[in-house]
Image (cartoon, rainbow, N blue to C red):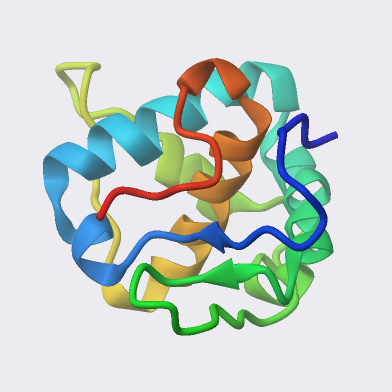
Length: 133
């Protein structure tokens, strides 16, 4: 399902903690693309199924400082079958153009996986395999 121009062994950069903590970057590079992708994914529960595809990239995922990104199994990270957490993640503030809540460090790996899925599945984003530095 990932339609990228990467080769099999090409490294893929994931977001560093400071990227996720940056509210503007979080809103523009993580939350808005995930909300846009939600219509295609279909439901909160369906996010669990599509995010499992990230495991196909294990061994190629690196932080910007070149440390490998190792994550728990996706179904362990998103253990609730209905994936209610995703509903909370996608919820908008009353203004409608910003997230109702931002990630805490305990959820950073979930957010990394969501951002990576959206980036790799939206070739029109122009971001490809590289995360911001």
